[in-house]
Image (cartoon, rainbow, N blue to C red; front, side, top):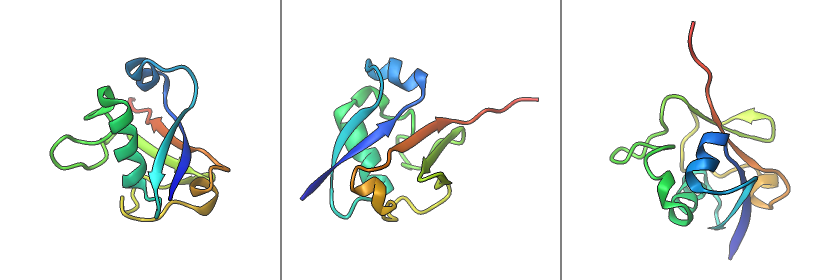
Amino acid sequence: MANTIRVILPFHLRTLAQVNGDVHVEVAEPVTFAGILDALETKYPKLCGTIRDHSTRKRRPLVRFFACEQDFSFESPDQAVPEPVALGQEPFWIVGAVSGG
């Protein structure tokens, strides 16, 4: 069974993917962070390498993942997402981190 996951992308990734607003991807159960990113990169190939490194598949340093008001950026990609995200009740946020001095 596949779940429809709502993903909120930062402006620069929406521009790259040529979408307006939130996007929706189908993810097979169990819904994991890696599963969401795999589905996102499959549906929007221009995002490949922008969120995760091409070869290591690790999260890029200036990208953060949020769900249910919690930062999941440093969690295992194979971890199941919170139930409200898996059920489509809450979005999965991909946020560009702010850095500088």
